[in-house]
Length: 394
Ligand SMILES: C[C@H](O)[C@H](O)[C@@H](O)[C@@H](O)C(=O)O
Ligand SMILES: [Mg+2]
Image (cartoon, rainbow, N blue to C red):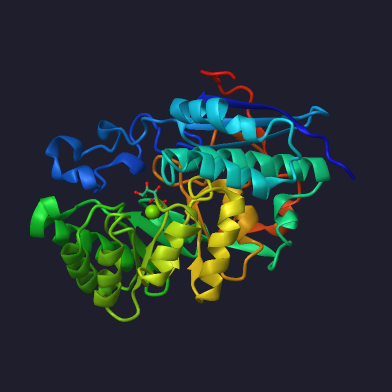
């Protein structure tokens, strides 16, 4: 059955949380003195918003077919991503068959390679690719996970990212990943505080609940090694994104340095099959964590995941709501998923991309059943009460 052609591609911005989940107002655990590469500057140490972690905002991509069906997706990118979608990428979609996602992806990537390859440009490509898969699912009347080969398990299980693993345990999650608060610029005193916080949380959750640290690129190999060794007695399951995503050599060294039994993970700020091939072939980590809204979309994540599977590595995508859930449930080497706790405490489960997605499923007792992901496409609709701005047209 011939599918209707793509008629329009439109790009909008939205602010206030959602896909750019760091774009929060008021007191929130996700902006509470968290260590970053900017922590070496005291004026930028207290708040990540102070150095602009939320400067982009959300990119909303809409793709409308000839028959009026609309696929959409949200990711991080804001106004500059809108420009790239409207002025550059749209030409490779309008008039095309929505099922031609391989050729469309190839043309989006290689036409922007001279100024893209990672970051904002690949975020924009990812947003278009996700909207295309949403449209394809809606046109075929199937959830995206079915287009990817279908579930390999009956439910997803989640670990929770946030400042309260003790609450996450009560809520039924399989583990808790905490933000690291102190980096090298805060010296030995900061290192001791990091270890003490883990020890305190271990005492609260008991010996078997997973505890992880997310270091958000803030450390160097020496500090990360010392932190890993000091945290080992408190059962740290993994040290995440400890150093710069560009320092593949540093990750390979850190992975050799950490105590046996502790995992090194990274990848949320890596992009494309080529970037992840580097992480895998240089043995940088035990688990790769691509964000499907930043790494190239579903079309590219399929390739990244197959690379990792061939090397016996797990792929646990960075928290990206339904966009990763539909993928994770179809892959054996993705045995669990991340749920980012976006409640300010966090003491409650709220939809990760709130308020942008209507019908966004949330874990109950730390799980989402495959049957909850059975609507066409990614199974969500754009909340039209969220103010949208279309800064460019073509
Ligand atoms: C909690 C971390 O600092 C980031 O805010 C988080 O978004 C990301 O690193 C994650 O793995 O969820
Ligand atoms: Mg992370």
